[in-house]
Image 1: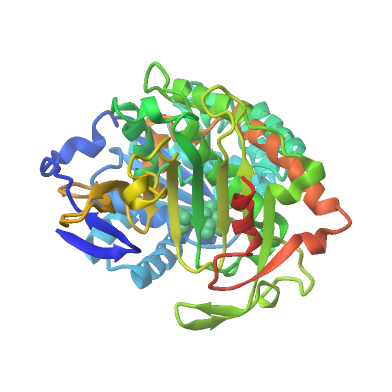
Image 2: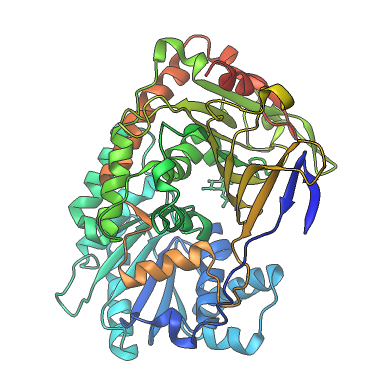
Length: 520
Ligand code: BG6
């Protein structure tokens, strides 16, 4: 099959996959034996209804939750078990079709307990209720504590939980206890370390699960399989053959209703400190000797250690920051960032960043990695593109000229979950001619089994106690160590306003971002 829809590159769908059929039904629950209670702290908020509950409900439908399991939501809002379940049902059924009888079965495992974050007595009651639930339902005192609260509440809440014995493992009827925290893990290196110290006073590192939903995306997990389960890519995956790597996470969404958070974080903390760094690490890391959580995370840490510090005196050649102005997205007019609800009129928060990063190690010396992410860009697109070097000498230059397009490998994460490789062939033409063609592999081709969304995967892994797809403390600190000087320089310099370049919503960001690549 041939079509010409790739800007001058012919697409030839040549990959053939073995039909994998459907895996056995028990497949998702294999190894998942521990019953547990999932305690969601901050359960009246957006994260619970938008992400956690739909994920838990889907896992329930896939028969992937342990038996028995219970979910207890708690927050300041005064709700009963029933009114909490009703709220969830309304939210979830407004966004997806639900099977009412399955929902009722799922909802019967959900309870709600109002708490006051600053009152120990409230946590004593909560602990009592959880203990009672363990005894009645047989959840064995195993619990996952999911922090769906603002980071400012992490420290006092962890302290309260610890003081009523909910962090302890293996004593007073407790089984294991795991805590899940969402980003932001601090605002900079110092605050991240303080936050970690306060969590570590109560929980040990093996109990802490720091989520990055990008790590749980299927095609992000696939990067390591693709690189390390094939013999043909690794030998060329280095500075001798690769010219540069571009990692892009472009969004069409604006700040939505999250101005309170986003104004404080901006794109560097929101996307770079976490997701972009993980994409970089998976692309650049060395193979560990075994596919085991800490060995994989050790290799990622080595990548973060080799990040070359930014030349602060000359940031413009390595970093472009932007903020969107009004424009058109998918045919609709959208306002400027500064006109979004909750955003300050004079806001200097960047919504776009593109940076040129180098890794000072043997494999990658001299290869630029371009990391780009922004809101309100032309298209929602997440991909890693590996641009190989040009051929060293063209024997065709007399007939076809000097320019032979270099190979390009794209690991598509969104919207197309695919891997494409572009290379040169002769065109079936009596004349001597070259054409660029692309081989595509669609990630879900010939697979009909269950697919987990990112939150389903992280919840399942947390129940299994598998840290593979979670951040480790040292990695968080190394990434903050890299980004903090940049943030300080950008946020405290006198010409902050000049550095923030406007770009029209629906465009591809400030033109200067393209220029970053020119002076490679
Ligand atoms: C979140 C950021 O972590 O990732 C959001 O806080 C961003 O601002 C989102 O929109 C992007 O995730 P995805 O999976 O849609 O690419």
